Image 1 (tube, rainbow, N blue to C red):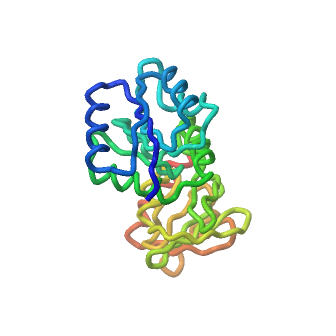
Image 2: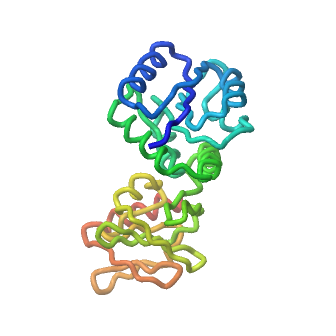
Length: 250
């Protein structure tokens, strides 16, 4: 595994000291070359040192870690967010395929995150940061980063009609009649997609309520989507579905 030159950006001295100690003891391929506790200092260090990895806290003295990403001219680095931030931000991280670790830092989680960024370094970083920043500006994340063999494909959440699961794979069906197969389980997508817009109609189906065409009562009940696809509705979920649709439309 190649060496990574890293910058720690955090305004809590104890957190910086603890993180640096963990890296020194458990992450031999990471070399901490600088530290910063503000947006201004972070931008200077990134510009001068050109790190391969930035360990970035959210709350800083004069702004946020997101300000660092927005203002940085040098973005060819990986980022691992070190955060005690809220669930809304965590959902945005997951949508954009951005690594994050919750405080207090867990040694195993940090090592796994560093391994991921070390083995998957690519030009994806800039695209993922852009998706993350875009998602954080809206109440509900608008884009989703989908892993592919070539890297990541970025899709609009509103363009998803449904997601179908088969064993450990999922197929995402889009408005433009495209479909993308990914090696992630349905539960992952149910967790990160807004429950006010997406409904688990069946163990194998997650649907976008925005693209429901009609509910059909016969034969136990099913849902027809705007692309003509038929989605089975589990009997025990009928009332929940009707409630979800009513809530979505109000």
